[in-house]
Structures are given as C-alpha cells and as structure tokens.
Image 1: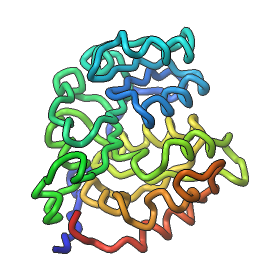
Image 2: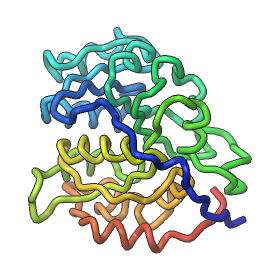
Image 3: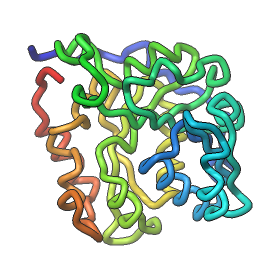
Length: 247
C-alpha cells in the first residue's frame, strides 16, 4: 500500500549541534563495507575515528593499523560515547542492539536498508507505515537521526569522493527531522568529498531505499569501478521520480 507523506512541522526546529566539522570524532557502530569506507574517508579528511562491531575490538586491529594513529577500536557503547557524530551501520535486524543511552543528544547517521531476506520481515516496513530511519529514531528517542550513506555502493562511496568545487563532485541524499543535525551531516559529508541533497524528514527516506531511482544506479553499475559522478541535480531528479510503495 502507498504511504502518505507526513509533515515534520514542529520537529524540524534548528538547534545547535555543538559539533564543528573541522574537529569531529566519528564513532562507528558497525565497521563493515560502509563503516570501514566512511572511516577511511574520515581519517583522510583529518577526523579521529572510533570503530566498533558486534564481534569485539580485537577483530578490528588490522583495520585500525591500516588507518593509523587517528583510529582506535572500541565497543559499540564506547564508540557511541566517543563520537561527536556517530554512524550506525549494522544490519537492520540488529538496530535494537544499538546502545541508546550514550547516543542521547547526538547526531546519528543511519545507513540501514531493509532486506527481508537478510533481516526478516518487518510488517511496518512492508505496509509502508514507517521507514527504516524512523525505526532507528524510535529506538533512539533522545538522538537526532539523519539518514545517509544508504543509497550508494561502498566502492562508489570510496572512489567518487572529490574536493569541494570539483566539476565531477557527486551528491548524496540525506533525510532527517532536525535541521541542525542535517546541517552537521552536510558539513561532514562536504569534508568527506560529497555534496548533499535534502530529501526531507525521516518519513521521506523511503525515497532513498532499495530499488528506488536514487539507489546505487546514479553512481554507476553495481560492481563496476570507478563509478559515475552523480550531481546534486541528478540526485534531486531521482528522488523526485521515486514512487511510494510497500517495502
């Protein structure tokens, strides 16, 4: 069934994030393909990173060694506490395991996508009554969740990063209910090498999910490198072309 768009009126009030893009520690809850790629981009941009996964810090030593002195491994709760901005990049089925208390008041980037064959069936996503970003926001009621990084293959994320002002710079869509949090994420992505396009509140993040026009294909074919730059206009057009569906 199609889901109506819900207004974010009253939820989109600008607030100070207390985060400066030039002195930000990035916490990562999940350090797989997207998490490790974000970590590499963040270190290259001068950020400190604190990595975590479900298997323990000892399993991340090779990645930490590769990243160098600006990276360290920790538990998910420690990464959540250490990060000025925290990236949650775990399978959707595990979103309830994300520690809520240390994320209170923080900007959280949610990279999750819904794959029923991996995650199991979520009725509220199947019937279109909520979105993946809203599920995480509900689990983290005191955090400020922004959807991001979920529509691009990790190899394209790595290969398409460009300095600000580059003619072939790509854009990534974001969605969220807090204007200041979206601004903080926009500034972070700018430093990592990407422009941003605001897709609206979390209720609209269905526009960036699996099998929508902005999912993967604007950046080139899955599995093909180096990828194709996708401008902000390309991303805006793809978002506008999305059709509400069930999951």
